[in-house]
Image (tube, rainbow, N blue to C red; front, side, top):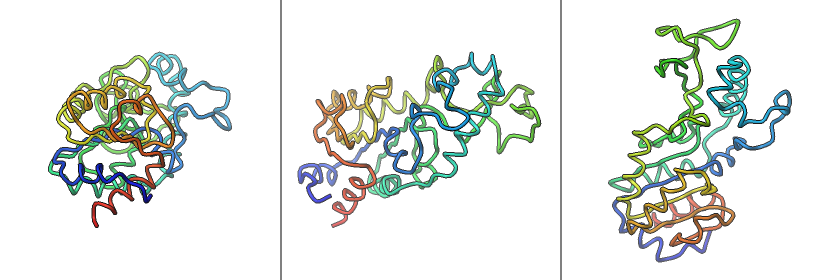
Length: 246
């Protein structure tokens, strides 16, 4: 990408605090299907929003467990892309860097990002359905899934935020703090439609941050972003890292 605004690069060079919000777009570049992508194969007849609820799990825990096992396999096959890796490099440049993600695939941590707030949890972790206690390691073998938590005896479920559930309060509060204190706020590969995450760049803009949108298409964030860079994260972010290194 050859047309990066000089004002943006200057602002990044002067910035001390940088905060980032990533959405499904950056993971899609690694081959992870978005949540609302059409289901395939055996799962084509199911509506995702009807499976991702506590009520669905209580009604048919095996069905929901096996659906998430299928989704986890898709995520496990994916690798961090150039956009993920560029964010790792950006983190090294700033004294205060916070990365908030709406994605549950764990690719930012796999890439090497250190300060990651997972607003919607992680499909790579499990917890007890009854108590919320996290499982250490992989679930035990089970002939009739879902397996049980070894310590609590409750059914295991993925550690993701389902419809009707609140976001993890600590991650949300820290994400808000980072947005309000940021010199630069990057919003990457997100539709800017899902709240409360969509409010984070708004909070940053109100607090005086330079808001930078990186997305192939226009979103509601475009109208108040200081810079809107049209392109994929895997192309724009490496270009920014390269330009800052010159």
